[in-house]
Length: 180
Image (cartoon, rainbow, N blue to C red):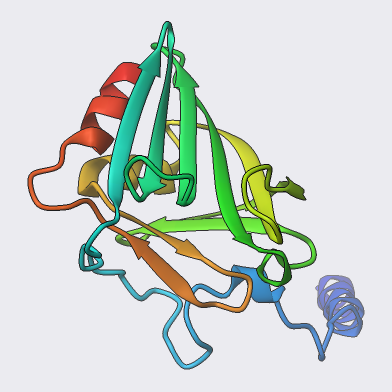
C-alpha cells in the first residue's frame, strides 16, 4: 500500500512539473472577447442590407457566396460537387486579419470550428488574403449552419462578423441539399 501511495505522489509531482504557467491559447481560438464565457451561445445575426447568400450551379458543382449580388465583394465562399458531402470553404480578410497561424473560425449557435487554413493573396481584391480549408458537411459548425441558415466568421482578434440571409432567402438550404 505504501508503494502505491509513494508511486501516486511521485506521479503527481512529475505531472505538476509539466505545467505551463504562462500558457495562453492562440488568439484565433478566442470566439468572443476574454470577458465572455466560452460556452456563450451565439444568436442569429441581423441581416445586413445589400448582403446575403447567393448560390450558383455549374454542371456538377455549386458555389454558395455571402456578399453583394453581382459584385466581386464576397466575404465567405463554400463550394462543393453534387452529392459529395465535401466542401472547400474560403474566407476573405484583410492581410493583417489573417492571423499567424491562419485559422478559419466559424460558429453557428453553440457549435464552433477552428481549422488551420491555407493562405494566399485573394485574386480579386488588392491587399486581401484568402483563407481556405477543406471540410465535410458533417462538421458540427457546418451542420449548425445548415440548421440555422446563418454563420458567424470570427477574426483572429476575436471580432465576429455575422452572415445572415435576408428574410425568406433559401440559398443556404438549397446549397446543402445539393452538396449532400
